[in-house]
Amino acid sequence: MSTTHFWESGRRYVSDGGLETDLIFNRGVDLPQFASFPLVEDEAGRQHLRDYYGQYAAVARRAARGLTLETPTWRASHDWGATLGYDDAALARANRAAVALMQELRSSYDDVEDVRIIGAVGPRGDGYVAREAMTAAEAAQFHLPQVEAFAEAGVDVVGAYTMTTAAEGLGVARAARRAGLPVLVGFTVETDGRLPDGSTLREAITLLEEEGAADGFIVNCAHPTHIAPGLQEGEWLARVVQVNPNASTLSHAELDDAEHLDPGDLPLLTSSYAALRDRLPGLAIVGGCCGTDARHVAALVGA
Image 1 (cartoon, one colour):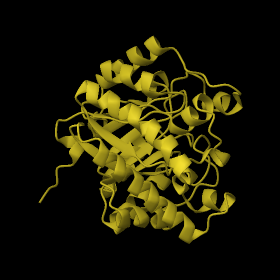
Image 2 (cartoon, rainbow, N blue to C red):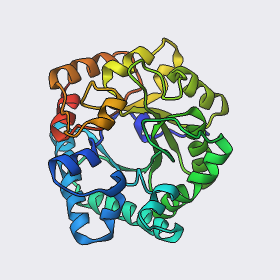
Image 3 (tube, helix red, strand yellow):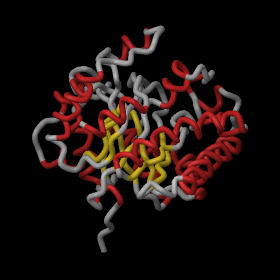
């Protein structure tokens, strides 16, 4: 029996924006290693997150849309956790605590029509560079502990964001399958619309489709004008259900070197995003990534 997932229901959803860049540059929150998951460990950190996600609940409320709450766990995997002094047990606790906070928020947003929790998984390495690529089997083993923590805590779906290789995306999908969870797999692209490892979006998504590994796909952390060249015609385009763009037209390398936040050109962001929507018939979740905040996401929803 086939399962209809929430993003296939015909309802549209608001996602959040660039969590880490908003906290660092707009709110002055210190995030070592660009990691937001430690904020769930104390009340002051949790309040920062409540304030942040509350903006997007307001956007969803005004637009009469559903809302997806992506856990602040993009860096809450073994290698990044180790650099912050987290062992495996502490990481599992933090991942479960992040889901618990999202559940608390969902309960408080009783006037938003539908709220779903996405357990966010990030790449093992840098989200902008494809170095020391893993095989799919290695990636599945690496990401499984985080995905199992999500399953224990009760997320609606796993979301892999900013994957730089198809193999790592496939590994996350396999881990989610082992944990019994649906999964959306997301890739980032460079200015030419290709993944950082040089493969095309079509190639990456087709590889996962051949295995039936994912329930849908995401593109994030790139400006719409960078995503557009990668949207080669084909049935695979209907499988892209979420696009969270960067605000800036700068390349990943330029963003890495930037000392100040580039909020981008809002009219260009919205018009170029609207052009993407016309090519992605399955697009159901609208949000932002680096450099975006609630103002950007509200404009994208309106576009």
